[in-house]
Structures are given as C-alpha cells and as structure tokens.
Image (cartoon, rainbow, N blue to C red; front, side, top):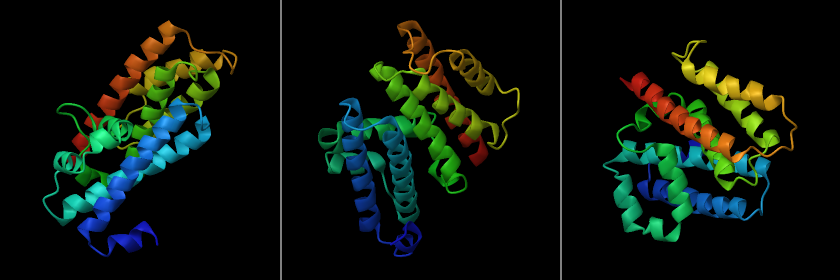
Length: 208
C-alpha cells in the first residue's frame, strides 16, 4: 500500500506506527553503518528514505491533532531504545530555535528532506573519519550544491553555494581514495553544520 493510500485513512495510531518504525530503522541503519556492515550507497539511500518517511508521518500526525514529538519520544522511551535513531531525527529537525517547519514541508518535502539527509550523511562520514574519503565526500557535496542551487529564493552568489563549490573544486583534484586530513575534516564538519542551520532558516522564511 502506497503512502498516499495510507494517508487517506486518517488514523493517528497508524501514523504513530510509521514514525516509530522509521526511528527504529534509522537506529539500526546508523549502527550498521558505524560498524561497517553496510556500504555508503545503501546507507545514503536508506537514510534519505527514512527521514522522508519520518517527516511525512509527523506532518500527518500534526495535521490530525495536537501531536507533540517530545511527548511521543518520552511515552515510548525512544531515546533509551533507539538513541542513534533519535539522534539522526533531532539533527534533521534542528537544534535550538531554528527548526524546519513541518507545514512548509508539505510543499517542498523531497528537496528539504534530501538536503537534510545528505547533510547528515556528510557529517556521519566526517565523524567516522575512516570513511571520510574523497570518493564519498565529493558526490555528497555535488548533491548539496544541486539541491540548493534550485531551491526557492537561492541566488547564484549565495555564500553557502560558494563554500560548497570551493570544497568541490579542492577535493576533486585529489585521488578518489584519499582520506581527508583531520584538519580538513574539522573544517568541513564545522561548515556543514552551518550549511544545515542556514538551510533550516531558508525553509523557515518560506513559511512566513
């Protein structure tokens, strides 16, 4: 049954089940990737799909009634059961005051979730270091650039686009199998966190 077909049922319990399942699977996916049990391509595709499913389920729950994510997490003890899954979801949602407004994601779900998921994937590779290779990092930078340059309100001289492109140019000159230095990992991770926060701000402005 497709998501569209399921969404017609308007059953909060069904949506809660989908959200719970997405978080649980995110947790297992993150663990398997950290342990080296799955490859980069599989991780990337599944991460994008799961974050998208989590967003869709939450949008449906908030549309149906007074749904509170923190209460849902607490009630189901999700931080204890699936710490890595919750970590990924919180990183996707945002920290502090700047969060992605779910009402706006109804209009641009794929671009928004794909940018967020690719950013998380990039940060994961950088944090693990052993997989912070040029052959993995550059395609993710390419994807971030592609999504952002076609995003509503983004101009060609936007500073995030320029920073992403600068890294693409520098790293594309290196051997694909080369591991990034600790210094480059630290710098790129810092900038990637800023890009993600800036992107949340872009989505928030669209909702105003």
